Length: 349
Ligand code: SAH
Image (tube, rainbow, N blue to C red):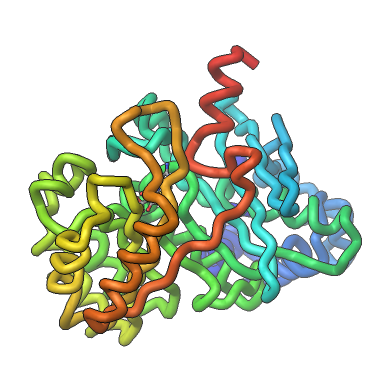
């Protein structure tokens, strides 16, 4: 059965034509599931009972189910969701003054093997389908609906478990579905995809000319250190990543965000800041400094102290690079980087 939540409007239009229907049926279905939030075909009163039966036979509207829900003191909600085949993925709801953001996973596990990240401990089990990514947002929307404050997800970051550009086609469909005005209508500028630097797909994404945000997980300013921290750098070294970023900027006229995790004594010295300035000068991008979430994966890594973080920020700013420090959410519930899942699985739950 095809899950309706996994279909872009144009794919659904195509399917409706194949059913001998007019293509506007697709828009009608989109309106039912995304605007009116119908959860069954029976609610779709302006579609004939006969065609509803056809739909029921071939399509479903299944969502992941909530396995574990944690709510932090700052209102951040972290869900561990069960997928149909029993695999589990995490998503997080973050509350900003300007709206509600969903942090979405793109794969079950991850093959990138970054040494500081716990998502990759077990490797990649499988890619997520578009409906499983859309499903994460819809489940978070249900939670917001139950709160009765008239809120829904307005911002999406693909920064959960997985490497989105290692699941390129599904992630692209997912973005098209949530961005479409008849879909979840989340503005392109409210959608951010984060990649560790799979270069050929940065080019491909640039050619889509989306107005979404692209974040590059840099985390180190030279190849030696980056290759030690992120094995992807051995396949796609920094100069290739930077070339791709320049192409992306030229094609989309959008500036990228460079994510830079601060690891005490490893990548947070003045020298590193200077190398970073040199590396990204000549691009429009700006740096988002990320406080490291300590995991028990590797005891070489510790969060840089507040002083070092601010000193690093100062060096960058003095060097003419715009930088910010990432706001943290839900640190009391491990709302980061595969930790909940790891814990639940350890406990055999
Ligand atoms: N695979 C993608 C997106 C998922 S990770 C990527 O690499 O960009 C989202 C961000 O969280 C990445 O920048 C990643 O490097 C970072 N990250 C991983 N482990 C972390 C940790 N323990 N603390 C803080 N950030 C972490």
